[in-house]
Each structure stands twice: as C-alpha cells, then as structure tokens.
Image 1 (cartoon, rainbow, N blue to C red):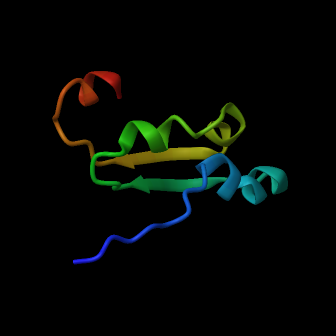
Image 2: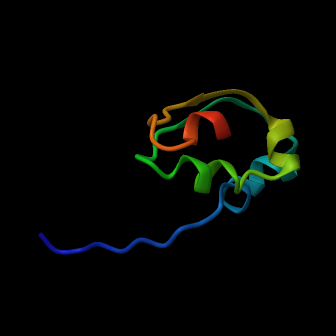
Length: 68
C-alpha cells in the first residue's frame, strides 16, 4: 500500500469561524487513532470556551490516559 499525506490544521484554526461568531459546539468527538495529545493540545482557550462536551477515544498506551 502507498503512503498518503494530508495537510494537518490545528483545531483552533479550523474551527476559528465558530469562535469568531460566538457560536458553540455541542459535542466535539475526537477519534484520531493515537494522536490524541497532538490534536487536543491544538485547542486554544478561546475554542475551549465554545465547546460544551468532548467525547474522546484514548488508547491506553504509555501515559496517554494520565495526560488526558
């Protein structure tokens, strides 16, 4: 199988229009197959204020659950 590459955009940038409009995110579901820390750490304080609930799948490897 060939390798695929994708552009990675931090959530705070991708969801910035929601922050700018003062809207809310009812549920943010994150399922990123081992990249939990990398994704969650891109959520800035302003975006956190817009998020009401988070559903996060975390694989119990290393200290991932302790970090969350």
